[in-house]
Image (cartoon, rainbow, N blue to C red; front, side, top):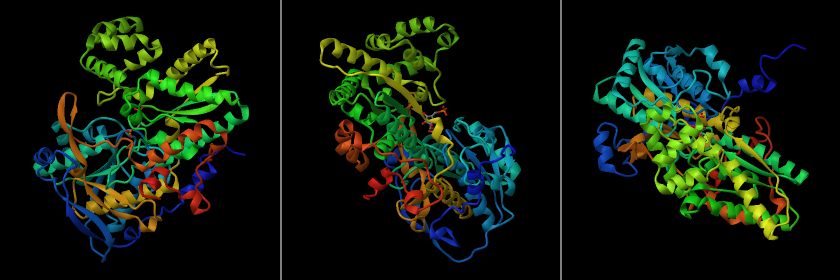
Length: 551
Ligand code: FBP
């Protein structure tokens, strides 16, 4: 036997032909819909985007054969990895070549910085073929550099002129797509002949609205985490001796946690948006968890599963205030950054916070307090993926249970294991849903380019129906924007979608969670993603999408 160069699944998956909507199968004609306006702050957004504001929605239909001139296009992957990114690029490539085989696709390397620093490769047939239906962003790499300054736009223009690039596709989340729109507007205002198209990416699922049903990657990531949760649940109900505290990625929004809860039916799932709405303190959360643990212990069940969204800590009002103060302090503080010992930093922090925040900071275990003062991301936000909330909760819950034991009101055993699932799911081989959705998004982007559009996001809707019936088109990015305060100034941004407590996915969860908390037989074991087999297993969309579409 020889060492492998690819797994059997990698080899089989390379020849998977993604399913696309009927309208993308042959020649396409575009249909202009109604003109649009931004979700809020219409006057401000209109002033900031005089050329790209108010454009109509676009939908695609089967059309007549047309001749398209050859076009050179650049593509950028921006931000965190999400399964399906490679297929967006494959879709753009195939779409461009189908319209004119002389078209070329360039990939800017390591994210937006590649555009600014003129670091790129030409994406050729063999590179594309090697990445079809694969996970990861390694085809050209990704990065979190923000494209928001004029000198960066000009550097971009320079390289586009040199390579005769007429359009750039930015594959990213809400901030990257906001920047895509700013770039589109800038190039129009400065008579640069460069179109900019966005694509909705992020496992977090928080780039969605009435015209973008979901971001790509959410489906696969949730399926990977749900498989792991299901496996842990089976282990928990077999061994009957551990409580598993499982933190899940997703940044601020709890969409991933909610979807995984719907797929696996754990004993407890915390939803940050609910914690904030109910103004819960850390102690309230601990009390809620402890009550369930005690109730289960009274029935002889000293085990269970608990899901925690990674952004939870930022939604606890007092913690939110503490984090905001820390963000401000860290934004302009060379003294702090120059300090070497944790103790020195801790003392310094306590000396600059308000009294209330100092009290909370002091009450936190040292490890968590240190994590809260680590480097911020390029947007100035605390990196929630580095904060081990699950360990904090285990510590606090154990303490409270010990008190109850001493009082004689708890007689169970509490042994907890912590987990964090995030990076495990971001580069998984895309599910059929994500492989199909992303490939379709890529083709849509190529058509928007061929039709001369700019400032649009590629969109594919009706996603809970078979792929044949999906509806492809384009959405003006300005339509999703409002004004928000960022770094002390009001900025136009795409509105981030948090979990809606009046939305169907949360309402469904809220209806059943008490039953799931005290009953073992409700655990669900989703198993691994299936790539080949019956459609009802392999092509299933998320429960979030199904519930949101009334199914
Ligand atoms: P995007 O918003 O860029 O898609 O990234 C998503 C995410 O995976 C979050 O869920 C997580 O908090 C963050 O990236 C982690 O960032 P990093 O990759 O820099 O560790």
